[in-house]
Image 1 (cartoon, rainbow, N blue to C red):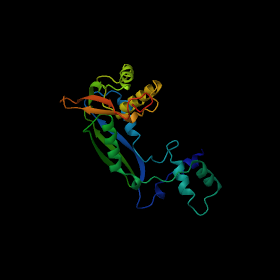
Image 2: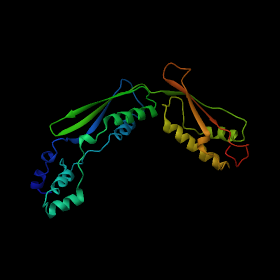
Image 3: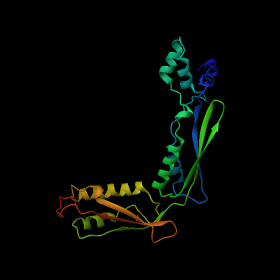
Image 4: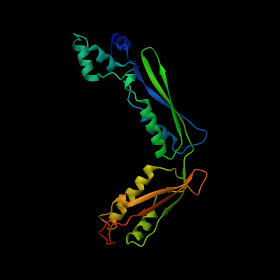
Length: 236
């Protein structure tokens, strides 16, 4: 890219008076304890920071610059060509929903067992730009004490108990909705392979119980709901 074009990629002079260019967000997780899978958790939370700011090429917002250039009455062939290839609509700070993002972060933390965490945000402003820093005070995660199946006399019971021998859920695991969804899917597939063709994973009900503990642990129970008379091609 010619040097002259790089120099011309400044965009702040084109930003409307009542707007600020959104330059992105960061997330800061404060904790005083080790966390299993911390990098994955951090990446998961970073994925919630929307919208994405305008992209940069070699430090320049070429796509945004081309957007402003084609707004002129006679933008010229080169400017139109660049806009067609790289052009981006401006992302202004006014489009950022900070409270919604804070709620999404808290929800995702709950889904991963970090109940009672707190999220605050700080807006960092310049004359024509603004960014957001989300600060998370991470609570201790709830960890699994035991995983138990509420046994029944249904024909499906023996098959479920056999499948549980291969479960990946183990003592010490963090509470996780994704973990439970994966377990339901695994059991569903295994039971269909055993001949319970009309079985539905929604028939497996999980319950978490913290009543026996005062140190952020929980027991996980699940049971199979009765949906028919017990014939092999029935739901259960």
